[in-house]
Every structure is written in C-alpha cells, then in structure tokens.
Image (cartoon, rainbow, N blue to C red; front, side):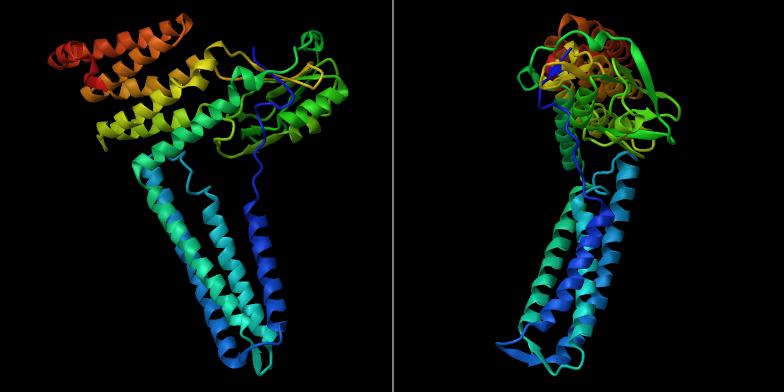
Length: 413
C-alpha cells in the first residue's frame, strides 16, 4: 500500500466560484466607472459625445451575453448528442464564465461612467481611451471563446483533452513511488478498533475531491486515523457510511468539511472518469443510429494510452492510499479503484457493442495483446479472458478477416 509523506498526492484544487467572479468584475466596473471620470488635467474633449458612446456601448455589450449563452447551448448540445452527456469540458471552461463576467463588468462601467459625468461639459481623453482598451479586451475574449467552442466540437481535440486530464487524475491517485515516499509509517492506530463511523447526512452527491492535507492535520491533532470508504468519483448516498475513525473521534463536521461534492464527477481526483468518457464516446459511435466504428477505434487508442500508462501500471500493486503525517504515522486512508476495475469500465461494454465491427474487434485485440505484454501476471488473467472473448467473436463472425488478422498481427493498429 502506498504511503504519502508530508506532501500528499491528493491536493484539493480550489476553484473561484462563478458568482464570485461575476461579483468581482461588477465591483471593478463600478469602481472604474466612478473613478475614471474624475481624472482631470491634460487633454480633454466634449462630454456629450462620450456619454452617448458609453450608453450605446453599455447596452450593446449586453448582446455579447446572448452570444456567450448561444455558444454554450450549441456546444453542450453537440457534446451531449455526439460524444456523451457526461462531457462538461466547455461548460466548465473558465473562459466561458470569465467572458460573461467581463461583459457584465464592462456594462456596469459604461453606465456608471456615463452617469458620473453628469452635467460636465468636458472630460479627460483618458475616459474614451480606457473604454476602447476595455472594448478591445472584450473582443479578444470573445475570439478566444469562439475558438474554444470550435475546438470543443472536434473529436481529436476532445479526445486529447480527456486523455491528458485523465492521465493527470491517475497520477494524482497513483503517485510514483518517489513522489509518495515519506517517513516509514508506524503501526498502531491504523489497526485500532473503529470508534466512530461518519455517515453522509445530505442528499445524494458525487464525491469530487478530498482535501487530504486538511484531514491529515485534523487527524494528527486528535491522534486519530480516518479511513474513507468511498473513492473520489463515487456517489454518496444519504445515511451511507462515509468514513471510519480509528483511535480517536473527530467531529463529523471536520470530516465532511474536507470533502468537495457536487452533482457530477470531475477530473480532479477521479481516476475512472476519463476512461468512462472514452468508453461512452466509443459506445455512442458504435450505436446503430451513428455507426461510426472509426471514431470508436480512435477512442480505443486513447483508452490504451491511459490503461497502459505508467500511472495505470502502478495501480496493479496499489491498495488503499495511506497518507502519513510529518511523524510518519498514517492518518488518512483513501480507497482507490483497482486496475482491473479501470479495465472493466473502459473495455467490457465496448467489446459487447463492437462485436459487429471487424475494425473495432481487431483494434481491441491489439489493445489487449499490448496491455497483456506490459502488465504483471496478476492482471494478465483478466485480459486473457477478454482476449478469448474478442477472438471468438472475430473468428466466428468474420472468418476471412480473422485469417488476415492472424497472418498480419499489426492489421488492427
């Protein structure tokens, strides 16, 4: 079982809330709208045309909000129908909500500045110059947003992003031995009897992140060990056991406060999410309504990268993740999915759906053979059973193509 030292592998990734971002941009626009018209000295111009420009711009910028939500609706609908309804890359992209917040802030700035000028006859040229700079910034953000929307409906970039973020999640949950090295864990409290069980008191939710550092500090202070029953990405049911406390009792609020939950899984610490998404894309492509085996083959290539990567290989020998405090005493134990679970998630449904496609069967066969050559003996039995399944379907349904595949082992690459 892996043991993490002082710098645990699971770090909570903090996100600035969408509402807070909008509030900050609104306050910034209000502040600029009140301060910039007070600039005096230097070159000045008549105030009336500036007021008209500000009011027209303030109303016009609101139209960008419609553009933003139109792009959001288009891309989300496209992703749901073409890829998988669980794909939320564009919806959660910071550029979407930052552009929206900037548009709101620019509107507030324009209206506030126009009102702040009041009955003045002349204003500093700094006011229209700053307005022009802000408008150009708005256009730049819209350009980035549109390019991001175009990329989000193309298959290859979407698969690349899913693979990259899935690899990062696997690295976080299955860190290299050097990164997870720490003081030798002491025996004792981890083997102590359970003194309290924390249950989930709220409505069902998805466990998105675990703030391990916070839990370690709290458990160290109380001389307790927290054993979490659910890995990141699992659904927490009301009243279900969430964690067992060994050695000493921690308040339930402390344990619950170290968990980040939501309505949908995220890539942050969920090792299986990327694999599930790639399998979903392959399944959608293999459905009778779509019938696009080439897309399924492309998704299988990304699945092979994840299942055969270094982090996934470390999952073969990984048990629960044990995180130690600075003294080397294990304080937090996090359950992790086994490599076999990742294989089942990524391949079983795709094999069942791809039995009518020789292209897909050939690609899965090559994938299984490559994985089998790289995994330890303990994982080869699982792959061998699936390889037998695939080869039986391939040889029985497409005997001529099967003979060619046997003669040319690289034909399924």
